[in-house]
Length: 238
Image (cartoon, rainbow, N blue to C red; front, side, top):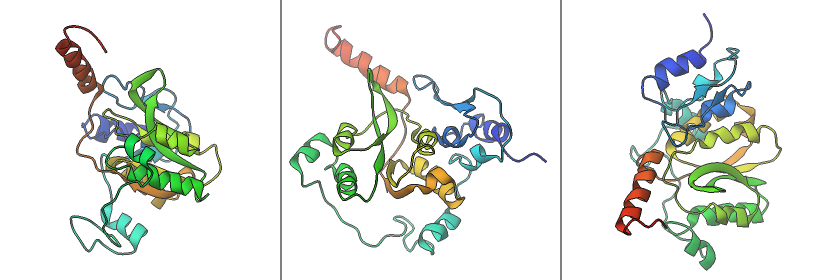
C-alpha cells in the first residue's frame, strides 16, 4: 500500500471541501510540486509537477482532515487542557503596545507587533513569519520573513483574504536561525503537527503566536467590498 500523499489529500480533503488553505502541503513538498496560486479564485492547492509519493508529508501536514488535539496537547504541554474553552494557559492578561507608533499602526492594540519587535531587538529570534500586503497588489496578502522592526510594522493589521502562511516553510528550509511565527488556528494546527513529527523547517520556529479567527474570506468578498465602495462614491474608484 502506497503511503498517503497527494491523491489522499485531494480525495479526502480538497474534493471533500475540507481544505483550510493553510499552505502546509505547499510548504512541505520536497518536489515543489504543489502550488496554491489562485488566490483570487478558489485558492485551492493543485499539483503542478510530478508527485513522487515521498512519504505522504503533504497529507500529514494538513489541518483540514484530522488534528490530533490530545496528542498535540501532550507534545506541547505534557497534559490535557484544564479548561475546555481556553485550553492550557499560565495566566490571562489584557494589554496593548506601549510604543505609540506601533499601537497606532496595528490592530487591536498592537500586542502581536510589540512582541515580535521585542523578540527581534533582544536577539531571541532572527526573523518573524508575518503576513503583509503584496507589493503592487495590496489587496492580496502574502507570508514573509520579517527581519527588522520596520518590516514587522509594515505587516501590521488584519488581512481579510486567504493567505497560505505555511507555504513559507519552503523558504524557511533554506535559511538558518530561530524564528517567531504568527498564524491563525488552522495554520497553527498544521505547524504543530509538523513540529510534533520533527519536520526540520518547522523545528526552526521557537515562538508560535496565534491570533483569533472566526472565518477566512475568499477574495471575492474583498472584490465585492471594492465594487460596493466604488458604487457608493458615484462610480469613482479610490
